[in-house]
Structures are given as structure tokens and as C-alpha cells.
Length: 326
Image 1 (cartoon, helix red, strand yellow):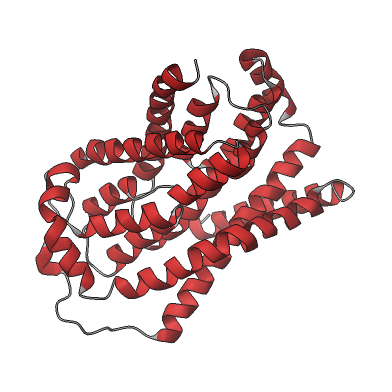
Image 2 (cartoon, rainbow, N blue to C red):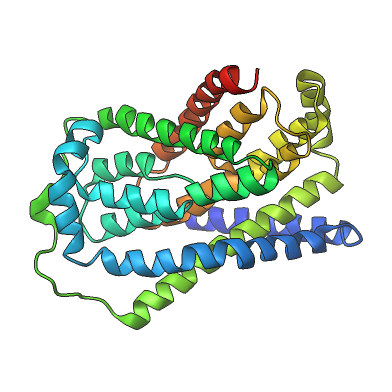
């Protein structure tokens, strides 16, 4: 059986199982999950990432990238073993959050501005959540504590830089492409239609993945597949909200944060939230992989980087909890 035919049957089996699950759960809250997922995408994700998808696609082709690369090359070469243009991708990722960093790295790779090994290093570094989301939404709105949000962002920022340094050793002998590969001059070679179309498709993909994971979570809850995991974790952490948040956070971080916030801030709250912030959840990883695979960037090192960042974030979170929440 050919690989393409095998994938077809895998997708067919997946959608058949999904269809059966939806029929069985027709009287449950699955329909509400679709609405909740769509609301999250429409109210929070769409306004925040669409402008960045559009703008970064244009900026990638401007001489601005060359100027940024020239300025930051000494720093990024030394710390991350990447060209200075990675600084541009990292700043974009920090400002806009998941999964814009992955898309920016993918765009740079497709335009030939970064090399094969360099793109893997950049994908590990440029995958972050935004400070606005962590400080305002998670800290201010969910936990009613801007201090908590600031600590969460600090852990996230430090862990991303450390991961970038660690992955600088990935195929270290393969050096960055350098400034010579970057476009010069001030001409812009892009089509407004193509740029707009690309941005719209990107945000629709993100919205679809978010909604699918909301549906998947409800199906797993309805079928009680998640119940044993929640029960075991509750016995370990002795906090039902935290136990539910851990399980939900593996699938979709926003829902995980929301569940954890119901129990207030305890010693484990910051480390666990930091873990999921670094990991991103399966939803964010799926969104990121959609762009990285398209640009033919190796995805296994990226997934490993997210898991490593999650563990590192948890450890850093424990140290800060010992200071602020003991």
C-alpha cells in the first residue's frame, strides 16, 4: 500500500470515528464546544493574529529584514547560531504570540532567507506566547493578578531564550546563511491579493484547529475517557480545578488556564501554568506544525523543543513560587 493511500485511510478512519462520536454526543455540550471554540477564535485570536499574519508576510520581503539582520547578527550568531534575521522573527513571535512565530520562520525558510539547520534552531526559539495574553488575559482576567501574569511571562521569556541557546548546538557545524542571502534595496515584490489570501487562509486554519480541539475535549469528557486521568491527578495534587486544568491544558492551554483559575493561586499554580505556556498544548503545536511542515522544516526537533521548554518552565516556576507563593 502506498504512503499516500495509507494516509487517506487514516484520515478516513479518523473522520468516521469523529462522526460516530458526534452522533453519540448529539445531546451533549458538543454543539456548545463548537460555539465556544468559534467565539474564542473570533473574539480573541482573529483580531490579534490576522494583522500580524498580513504585516509579517509583507515585511519579510522588505529591506527592513536586511537592516535588522545586519544589526543583530553578532548577537544571534553568538547566542543562537542563527542569522540576525532570527531576531526579527523572535520579536514578531513575542509581540503576537502563537503561532505567528512559527509562520514567520516558515516564511523566511520558503524565501531562502534561512538555511535548513538554521530554520530548526529558529523554530525552537521563535515559538512564544504574547505578553498581552499572559499578563492581561491569564493574569489579570483569569487569576485577577497582574503580578501572576508578569511572573508567568518572565518564566516564559527566560525559558524561550534558554531553549534557543540549547538548540544553537543543533548541527552546530552548519552555519547560518548570513547577510549575503538577504534582499537588498527598498523594492517590494508581493501581490496584495496573494498576501491577503495567505493571511486569511492562515487564520482560518488556526480557527479550525482551535474548534476541533474544543470538540475533541468535549467528546473525551462525554465518553468519560478523561475521567480516570482527572481522578488520579486530583489524588496527587489534591485540587480538582488544578487536576482538570492539567488534563485540559494538554489539549488546549486557554481552557486549561481557565480551569486552573477556578482554584485560585496556590504553590503549584505558577509552575503548572508555566509548563503549559512553554508547551503550548496540542492545539498550538498542531497550528505551528501546519506552517513548519509546509516549509519543510523538521518537526520532531520542534516538538522536542516545546517539551523541553515546558519542563524548564515548570522548574523556573517552582523557584518563583518558592519566593512569591510559598
